[in-house]
Image (cartoon, helix red, strand yellow):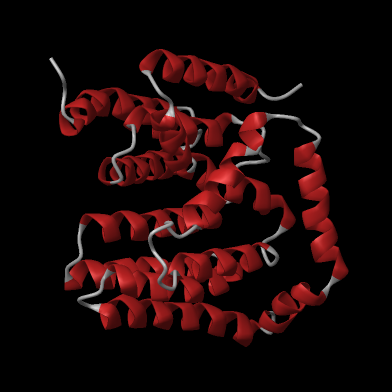
Length: 281
């Protein structure tokens, strides 16, 4: 009997949900547990609508929590990540006026929680308005207001200019260079795949010749990384890029000619991921 896509996901959902709960229970204190469970639930919501394997996305989420990608994200950055994921999940599940406003508020809340992401917030609003094409003003103005409040708080504290000045400092780019060298020396496939998947997702489709706001969002995100504290950069990038690379992996696997080949490639990828779970030697 051939299962439909929805039926297959209904079979996956209990396993994926239990796995998310298990990851949450291993996160430490109750606050971390709650945030981890919420983050996993948001990834599942995104995976369901995007027609991705729920188990695959949870596996990639598991790698973000247990891989050697730096220390866990500070609480405020974790909350900013949850706000960004909430925006994505809300936008793909509902396109009503209320969901447009909620999505915009969550998107703008990223700047309140993590001010270095203000440029990502601004550059992502046009894309959000496009997603909520029937209510573009509600998708932009609440988020722009909160972004302005977040920037205003930094201006009031007298730290906004110094933060922006990091873009003109050589140490900022040397830090990014050192991070790239450190990752490249690991010689681990799963440290490269997420970055490739993140860039692949940002590309326009071959039959779509219109202006693509996804590229603007990516550009804002890349510049924002230059403002993010060094200890946060790696875990923040991989917390997003690892689950997102499920899009690329799904396309790669489905492009293979038959199921035996797909299974063989999947086993090979899993074998490469094994060292990440316990740390690279």
